Image 1 (cartoon, rainbow, N blue to C red):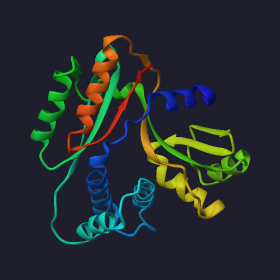
Image 2: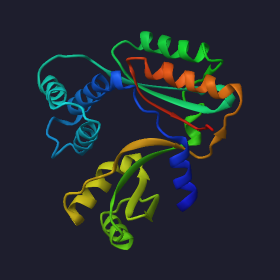
Image 3: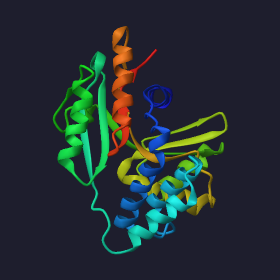
Image 4: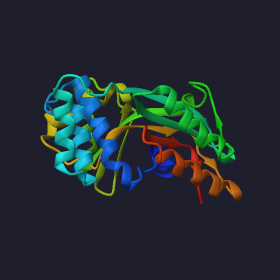
Amino acid sequence: MGRAFQNRKESMAKTADAKTKVYSKYGREIYVCAKQGGVDPNSNLSLRGLIERAKKDQVPSHVIDKALDKANGVGGEDYEAARYEGFGPGNAMVIVECLTDNPNRTIGDVRTCFNKTKSKLGTPGSVSHMFDHCAILAFAGSDEEGVLEALMEADVDVTDIENEDGRITIFAPHTEYAKAKQALLDAFGEQDFETDEIQFLPQATTPVEGDDVAQFEKLLDMLNNVDDVQNVYHSAELP
């Protein structure tokens, strides 16, 4: 894949959470991740990566600690994951990931965002088959062969590996995330991962032009203002 894959990664972009929502969204995601996989970041690598990303985004420690304490207790919110797919202005594909305690409310809020921006909410699977669901790990380094060897020895299914500007970037199926990260930690010790997450990357981008640009940006803004929305991925190539 190489350069073409990198171009898709750079051009699609996962939309950033609105700053006013970032703390609550991280808190909710940390809570769910810890509830599912345990509150110890050393044994729950997904939680470990999530906490590291939260700290890089300047989420205060008390927000992280509160989410972990809540996950370690009894009761608390019963969030479930929900994913919605559709087509935005210019026919660009959109995937919306949510964590919700009220699916009826969430689907209503997401549908409103689509309806008010001349977009169309689709059925499950209507666009996700046109995205690659990838684990992405990037860190400073240049020994591409050494990294690939370590991953292969750990029987990690590597989709692609890039070595550019002093940075190694590994792409793998999302199901290989924990195995890939553990293999890197075992082989090279602690790493300061510049990217450490699972994303949907479009297999092709869709140019959005003219009046559709403002409408698409409005759709993204509206979705990111929905409390239950965690991430928005899209195939739009905006000017």
